[in-house]
Length: 176
Image 1 (cartoon, rainbow, N blue to C red):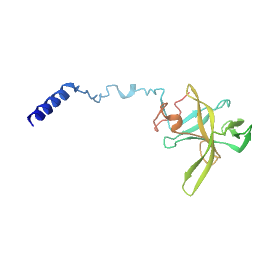
Image 2 (cartoon, helix red, strand yellow):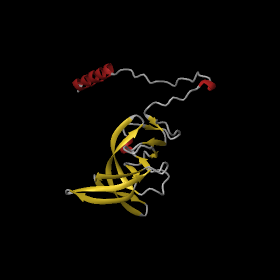
Image 3 (cartoon, helix red, strand yellow):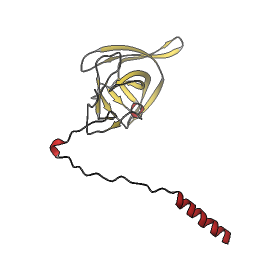
Image 4 (tube, one colour):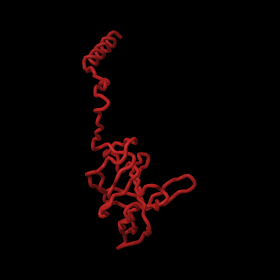
C-alpha cells in the first residue's frame, strides 16, 4: 500500500512539473478617440449580403450569406434533367435580375437532393458551378431551384463558407 502511495505522489509531482502556465489575453482598452476610428475589414470577414460572380456570367449577383444552410442554392429557370452518353445532366437558364444578363448552362448532375421544409419536401438537382467571391475563384456545389419568390438569387451556404470566411451579419457588401 505504501508503494502505491509513493507512486501516486511521484506521478502527481511529475504532472505538476510538466504543466506550463497559460497566459490568457486580457481586454485592451480602446485608446483611440471616437473621431479617428477607421473600420478595417479583414479579407476573410464578409457580411450578410455579398456580391458573388458565376463565370462566365459577367455581372455579379447579390447573394444572401446563410450559415444555417448546408448547401448553396441558385435561382434558375427552365430546369430540365436529361441524359447524355449514359450520364445524367441538367440544363437551366440563369437571368440576373439586376442586369437582365441571361446565360444557358448544361452541367453534369452531381445528385438529386431532398430539401426538407415545413409542409412539403422539395427535390432539387445539384450541380457544380464556377464561383468568384472577392479575389478567390473556385468550384462549388449548388442546388438549383426557382427562387423568384426570394429576395436573393443566390444563397451561399456552409459548403462555400467553411474554412473560407467568417460572417458578420452587421455588415454587407464587403467584397470587391
